[in-house]
Image (cartoon, rainbow, N blue to C red; front, side, top):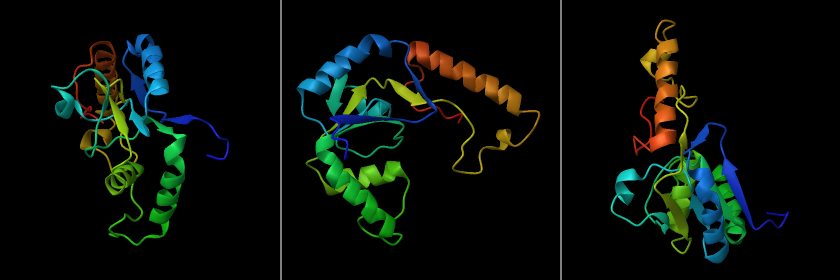
Length: 175
């Protein structure tokens, strides 16, 4: 915010992209340069919600999770930073949000400030690579020496199929 950048792209280390993203990135950048927006999610979990809508970057006001690949415009940064700092001091269960995962904080922020313009890519252009969860204890198959290598191969295969085809069009379950 203090550097005065126009926008910032937040990308987690486990984000993977559709193989056709490189061909679409100039179109995405041009759209963002010529239109008003505050958040732009390239990665999200909105397959069914967007199924019958136009392709491209489209406005979306509903809740969703997976803040792993998105951009934030500078004009929303002051309010967003103030809000995120507020959530650090609010008690759990506070109506404006307490300490929560960033995905939930962004959803609450967007609900509290309905003027915030959120764009999402349709279809989704990024998902999180399949891997054991670092936020919860994980699935049973991640705890056994015999199943871990097989599950790792399955995750890599699923990720590669998604990169090439976009299928499955929802967030991977085998995380």
